[in-house]
Structures are given as structure tokens and as C-alpha cells.
Image (cartoon, rainbow, N blue to C red; front, side):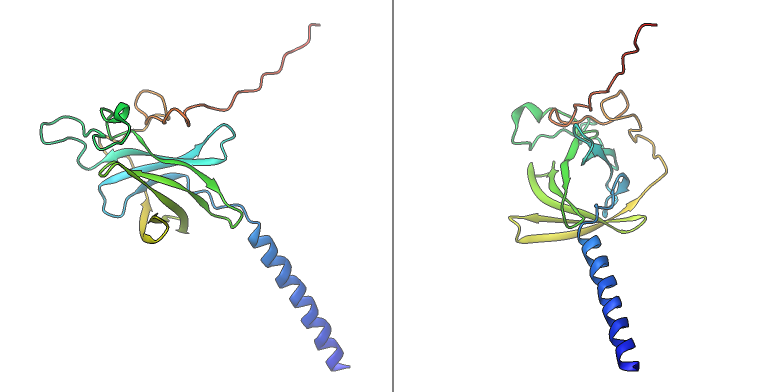
Length: 189
């Protein structure tokens, strides 16, 4: 009798574990939205929902330790392969381009590096409530992981406006479109 009870209990535990694993596999990604200080402390990046259905994550440089070049002018995106973007200020520009949620519960996409004008694949995840890990890869082979710390204060020179508004960062044109607001028409009475 004892053997039969243990066998049934083991079966119940196995079913519970299997259902937990299948739910974890289908889990939605933990939202990395917020303002983050880069590992080297040279910039703050604001991650937020973007895209028509707000299902992607975009990131913007909202503060730089050294926002000016040697002539006292704003740092420009001079290494950008797109000549039309080389005159834009680095402060406020979009560097994370619409990270997509994956079935495994992560976000995945590209990050742009204004220092060399290249894009790299990136995958962020929260290591703890106030820490964000970012794994960036070149050619999916050469990878590096950084840890960013969440910030809630505002430093002098930090952009605090909404994306696209004065005093806020600027989205690249493919991510600038906001979802169309649904309006209800009231019937005449």
C-alpha cells in the first residue's frame, strides 16, 4: 500500500513539474522598460514600448557624461553609414531598434553603436529588479555581456520629455508612428 501511495504522489509531482515547465516556456518576456545607466557610466538609456501595437522595445540615449565634442558642439552621429543621419546629435537618438519578444521569454533585436556606426544583435534581460543584462553579439559569435543599473533620478542635461516631444528623445522614422487611437462615435439622440 505504501508503494502505491508513493507512486501516485510521484505521478502528481511529475504532472505539476511538467505543467510549470510548459508555462515557463510560453512565458512573456519581463519588460525591460525604464532608464538605465550603462556599465561604464557614460550614458543613460531609456527603454520603452514602441511600434504600432507597442509590442516592441526601443531605446534612446537620454543623458551623456560628455555630450559635447572638443569644439564645444553636441556630439554628432558622424560614423553612421546613412549619410542623412550623420549630422544628428547623439544625445536623444535611438540606438535600440524595436526589440521583439521571443517565445522563450526574452527580447531580441539590434543595438546601434554611434562610436563605430555599426549595429549588433542584442538580447536584454532583467538580472534583478534594478539590473539589466545585455548580451551583444557581432556575427552571433563574438559576444559580450554588460550590466546596466536602473536609475530613477534625473541628472543635469538629461532628456525627460516624451519621445518625439521637445525635451525628449527622437525615434527613427520607422518607430515614430504611434498606434492609431480608436474613437467612438456617439449616436444622435
